[in-house]
Length: 202
Image (cartoon, rainbow, N blue to C red; front, top):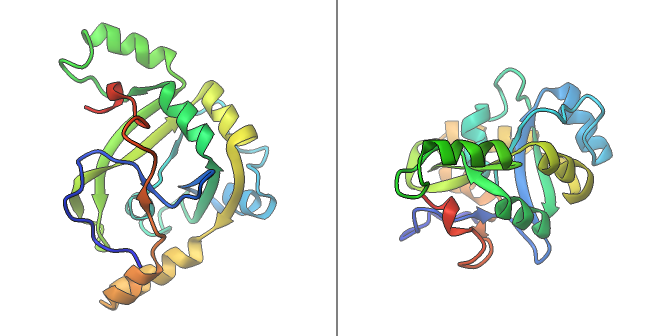
């Protein structure tokens, strides 16, 4: 059962994971999402030249996609990737926004941003009503080499979880919150204190 987290650090990666894999979420138009889930690989129509954002937080994905109802996001995918792939992306990532004191100056940050194949963004985690919580969840943008590795090397499996999203949403609407919480993926802290490089923590 998914339990509310108390005393959470402001920045932490929480995800459903095994010893070797991490589950992240994306939402696509059915023309991309359905064949991806059917074949376990992204289809030819998947845009490799665009940045793709992955999210380890199921509820943040629900917030972003409107429980899988927004145009172009009607198919919610759980993408199981290798832990080694996620670690590579974090090692090669830059923060998506400038932070005074963390970066030498804005020009330096912009150079890092252009060079980095991955971008880290920390957004408020969400509760079952999709209200923001006081701690943050990871969004990871992948482009160039990182996007290619994601599609071709890191992806272990892809599952269509749209029906689960709709079921949980229905329970939330009916205020059957304990039943809804019981269906949420078990997201636990991933990695150790060194897993997220210090330059990615604002």
